[in-house]
Image 1: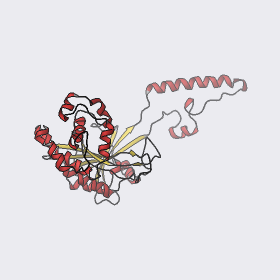
Image 2 (image 1 turned 135 degrees about the vertical axis):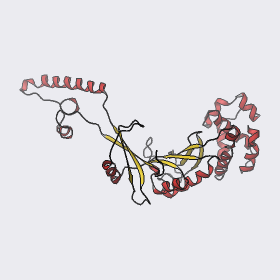
Image 3 (image 1 turned 180 degrees about the vertical axis):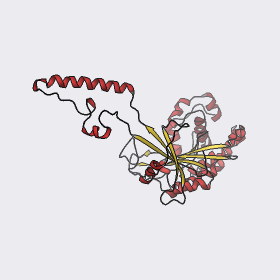
Length: 335
């Protein structure tokens, strides 16, 4: 397969590497990482498990693989412009699907941002969305993957600020030319970080059927409350509604679908809380019987406190909050 693809010639003609390597040629460094990804090892420190793998060392024509620090030094020596060259190599390797007689007529594009934590004072680091390490400076690269084959199609290393609409549109426009040949239908998915007019226009310009999670603004919530709600047989939601709504600053109205989920309290938890409340009431009765009064505990252990009575009403069960998830669908996509 590698001979049919002309991998060695492709790497030598595409990559601009001025540094002379001693332990292995530059082509073998790239080939080792590609083969490791092919067999399911996605990180460089996984190469230690393949150090003396007969098939891999036979293809590379070496006795054993070098440690991961050698591969890191090789990558660190490359110029930033090589990143685009490596992406062109990957796009050329899509010919492997043609050689295997795999033709993808329908594909799904997943676009998202990720958090890359910075340990130092690198330029561009920002304190932004970072749920696992709050307050730490990080970058936020934009990445797009092909869902069917989990291939990386395009990305951009950028600072830690939220991407603007123009940056999102520029990224999407760079991804569409990298799609495999012969694709007829393109679906796209993105979260609320890509909820902007520029992203929607980029999707529509490429003829993509898309779904984008919407940010819940006050106007959008009012529109969903006014829309008729029905059952949701195709999802696990308790109800759904559909309406057309033009967000502020957008060129036209789009189709929105809202899903409603009712939070239900588990039965086992209710029984445990009921038993705890009864035991607590008995303790309070024994403790204050000598004073001639019985003090009932407030809040979740006994009778509801005043605030709870106002919210639920006396004698009524507690009703959980209703979560609305809004999605933006293409105006041309009927399903």
